[in-house]
Length: 210
Image (cartoon, rainbow, N blue to C red):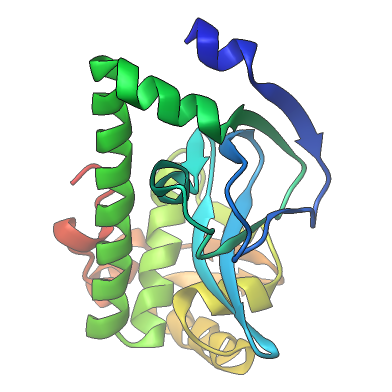
């Protein structure tokens, strides 16, 4: 840890900062300490959301370990603090320290499982079902609140659940029949049981601990 921190940089970034670009070689392992980061890909004139990261998260670790180009880009969706650890140092410690290698392997495994869960959700569910489960996941992260505020624009949310902005608006309206009420970017959960009955969350897709 002392070697990692000795070579690391702690930086603060404003909203909308592109932290890394797909196709570039990996110079640093990024560790999100505060804020919100979007992993995305840009193909032609369009963008697709890959994942949304909250603290504390590493990204994109696989590129660091393989010493190959980033497959995705990353940018801040909120003011963020990020620890930057030189990629070369990470690979050196991976070769030298078995305990560190074990931690890295677990982090890679969790990232892989998260990707598979998202793929399963996209294959098995309609866009409105994916939205319902996203709302439930956010509600579970803020268990004390009966409402949540979408922390980014609706276009970003649409991208991450695999739909268009127009379809997202229709899906939000549809969910008002299943226990929620919409007030701008605020989603008020009036009946969590009704929402769960519609969304049908599954342990092997929606449980972050599985």
